[in-house]
Length: 193
Image (spheres, one colour):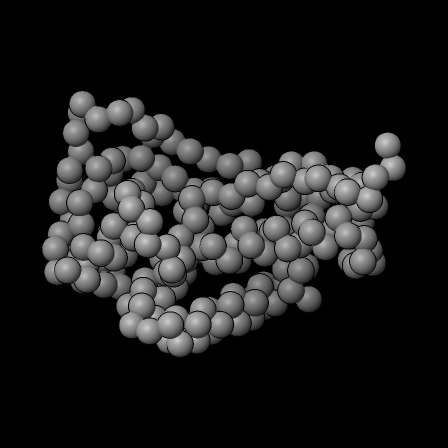
């Protein structure tokens, strides 16, 4: 009934950004191939995904937490209980790009090549994924900060310059967070005011 716990499930689009080294994920696979001086193997070049930098959903999750806490109530139009529901945090529609677009954008910042490794016998993968973020936009006044191009530029910069040491990784991460917040303030995004 009147519990202080307010659950609010949140989901993100396809997240990129420095520090992801997981196997069988397109950006880490690109970085490993480029580092080794090999062409990037691309399994599904026509798959379209909502690419976004990891800082985008993180800003949404933190802003949603603030709305639920009620501590910053003057910045929100509704009572905390109204935010206790599911939210999607994703990029603008023009950041929904194919894997081929993603790889070509990466190659603008780290020269190399890619090779089509699609296999018609491979397990079916959805060709188009998208997130409806209108609820986050209207209820939380949240919106993404970085364009697709800025997302990929920042992602590749992290890997190119920060992967050499832990201290460089931490420094590059702090710099990117500061740049992201500055861009959000410049765009007049409500959580950054």
